Length: 179
Image (cartoon, rainbow, N blue to C red):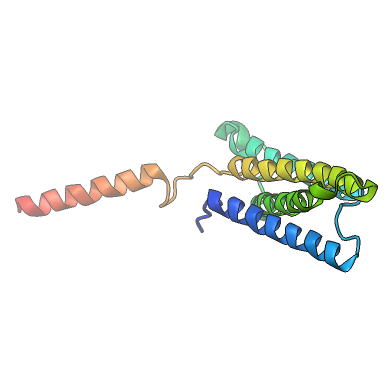
């Protein structure tokens, strides 16, 4: 199975959709009179803990995959399920971080005109802190995805094996043309 990097535009799309949703929620809260903007202080704390956990897991995968193969043979083998789960967590963290940063950013944009009111002022501060943590999580997700790269093994997809197969095809074609 070949896993590809998450394209850059998916982070932009997630952030844009988050901004639109956050702005829509803030506008609805303004119209209906329900206090829907803001983020409880536990949200950035939980998001930061999640980002730190995923970064730690990605660093463990990177540490294992970049070790010298001789030293790596002496270590406990890497569980492929753990490596794949870490990669998926990094991808999810990056996209969720982008979407949530947009979500809180959209709420900030819609709350700024009412910033002199105590409720909106508090909501802007809460959303700004949550937005910063979400941007950090997006960066951790992108970096973690890079950290989870596994160097190619000597299988059919490794560059060395592809070059050898290509040389063999050229040699066979040259031999047939001489006959």
